[in-house]
Length: 578
Image (tube, rainbow, N blue to C red; front, side):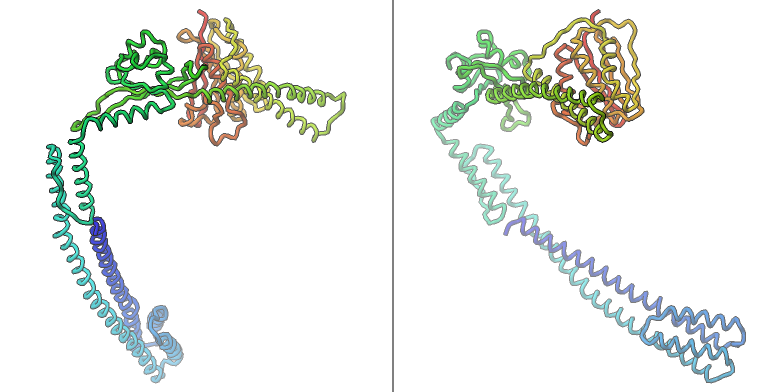
């Protein structure tokens, strides 16, 4: 039997018996307590009531106090009926007493009431005796079972105490001595204990290990060389370029794909220092610039795609540099032993991405013409010279206008995003007034702000220098930030717009008083197509991503400062003209 099964069986049985013992003791005590309470509360109280009524019967019943006392205890007895036949006796007592009160001189009624009281007392004393016998039987049963179960618990615990330490400690001690022998390179050592339990399996695994160590100790160098050749073949069969370096930046291996894109022969690469090769080969210098520029090992580096001529065309590769560390035998601290450079060919994905961008640009551009036609038609429909619309038609027309405007905005964002993705952002950067840019953006958002009765509080620093910016795109960014602030602000609130000069830059700040952004989403708001979960506001999730690209293309940056529940502040920084 397995040791785990033995422990589970022994300890589990002991645990079950302990629970049974506790449950039996608790049950016995509860039953005894219940029986005792029945005797004390029910029967003993009845005896007290009947005794008091007998004492009252011996006094003068013409006295109202005596009658009240008898009546009081009679009522208490009527509420304390617990035995079979006690209710009939109590009812008879009540009727006899009522007749006695009307005819206090009747001796027959006196004797009848005394007999009623005596019968009630006798009935309860018999119940007390019966319940006492039940309690005694319960006590006898508990006194027999509790010691029996306790004895079983003791026997199981004693067996575990005698057998368990030796069954566990002795094999461990023998295994420890054998491990010491193997550590001293005595690979002929074997563990002798056997069995079908875990220690038997451990002994078998240990003996197999020592046998393999003995075989390894006696193995030939040819086998080691064969395994080395196997690994080299596997690396060469990989479709992605792989280059390995040691801790001194010497190239240990480069598979066929890597040699092909580098353009050198294997003997010109293998065994050469990466620093020396970087002086004569641009691709080597680009691949290993992180390694040759610092002596600190790079744990893992992934940079943007590299453009490399491969497979007779311009191809794109993602580069990954992985540090290789090991913990030498007998040591605790890891040791750096080199790096591996992996290049992942992502050319098919780049081509698909380019096709996607082209498709988005074409579709978005084609959408603009029919959308413009829809807006023109809407303007004609609003002209009363063509015809007067009823209120329902006006509501439908207004709904179509909003949808057309939203569709035009989405189309514009898609076109802007295709510019960003293709890297063809057209900029016209000139010195311009930061104040005029902000005021133009506020003017563009005045109508939606008035609809929600939102006010703008503008704070512009005096004597501001001009900002170096693309006026159209910067105005678009500020308009987008103000539109977001209006969308997420409450009605009758205030949006704060500020411009100031700081550290050679012009800083635009747009602050709203909306719900703010939770901390876990602050780093994601500038990601494409990201929308804060739970937000029911409309949008594509592209506005902030495009804003970030437009501002960074001008050499600036855009940041967010938000506290959940109190609003958000977006800050746009652009270079100023001193």
